Image (tube, rainbow, N blue to C red):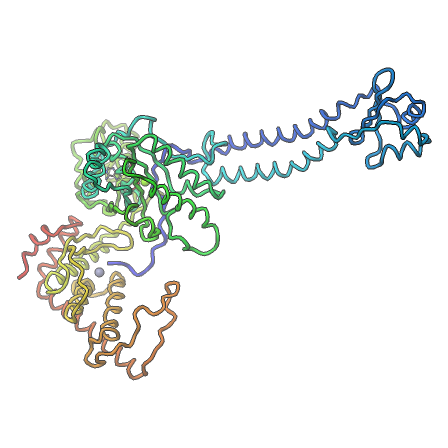
Length: 634
Ligand code: ADP
Ligand code: ZN
Ligand code: MG
């Protein structure tokens, strides 16, 4: 079941775990301290330099230009050195004398106008030296000032963008991946991760590889390079990655995609290089990249500029991963809650080709998670964590951890010795209302509708000949879907018959039919089903020639010009009359399928109710549980 209203984009960074202790509030104060310090220093140097470079002009030996003229005429001057506007007279006798000429005028010309004879001037050795003239240096520094200011400004922006942190002033090209306790390994193990049994099972292989890479290498096995963990924020992706490192006893390098995306082009890429270098020195180890969607977004997607940096970073990650040889014992674990927007290049074999889905926990899973976090806390004898689990549908691990914590705080405030049921129940509301609320919690009424809807799909599908068998039914929401029926994996068929399509339509309509049967009122929940139904029925008529009325004609090209996801109208090559017939046929096919679904549900209404009510309680059922409930259909 998928609501047709588009959910507002979820916060992709909301995982809330504090990767490596960044200061979330930023260290604005210290930044201002630093940058102002540098600015003031720069200004001081500038003005100080004027002072400093003016010094060599020894005021005590200063003489006027007419005196210079006199001395030259008198033949007392051995040599003249001109540096900018400073004139130094090396005398035949006595100390050097200084003078200043006017900038921009030749000394010779000046002296000539002052009546120095031509032959004296001719004999006079004049040397012109370029700086250290204070004026030149000074103007040079003045030119530098705006650059210093601009640099300081960029610095400021970068610090802002990069999330402030201590002592990062000079190392923005460095990876901020941190090794937890250098040389040490995470102490988290799989026992700290409750539920998620399927994910743990899949990750077990990675653990084994990291423990004994030689064993796998000896057999020439291709080792998993990249594991992509997909799941809503707070479902425990980071925790699982750490647990893999903990189980294998290897170092864990953690980093986040958003950290790579900085102001300066090239910084992200160099960070990636740095991160992998660091990891290679410590292999076997795990590199964890959180929020990989921040860099791994579909290349070329999104309008406007600003993608270069991301693309470079992404390319660098791909280059590094491709550069692994068989004895690079590094496994890269990436996490995202938006697998749909990832660049397909990331998912190619030899990259993140393993996908581990971390689902929201069902009721049983929630109870286990509560138990993990209740460990080591004084829990009162009246507490039944199963009841709390039943009242927290939609919550993820992070919420439940928060819930226990809130309860502990409440108990402490009430001067209690242990946490009792009261505090736990009260905390449910606090967590649900809290700002960090990230899961969608349905009302009891909505949950009921979802349960009947999914049960409807399952019952109908199981009683049809050509539909997929029911693999798993859940009313734990995932992505846009509020619940779903997962078919058993079966071989893909290339050719499908009309009867198969009709069954498929019927199965798709099972959800809607159940809703109408039980609640006598349809909801928006079936919007996605209906969309698929309409498309499929239309394709049957216009592309596959499965309608007797229209006959075996193809009236519509496959996927007509999907420009930017929009359909700019099909090129219609048939008449108004045929169009009407198509509509009529599509409607007839859909109505027939719907009627079949309804009939099946009426016939098996007891099973429908039993299944829906069980779903409401347990939230998820696998195939064996499902069959036990409804009995093997004939
Ligand atoms: P994600 O990375 O998927 O956003 P995290 O791994 O950061 O989620 O989870 C945040 C916190 O929630 C964890 O530190 C842990 O305390 C708690 N948590 C989440 N899932 C579980 C779980 N399956 N078992 C126990 N605790 C969990
Ligand atoms: Zn549905
Ligand atoms: Mg996380």
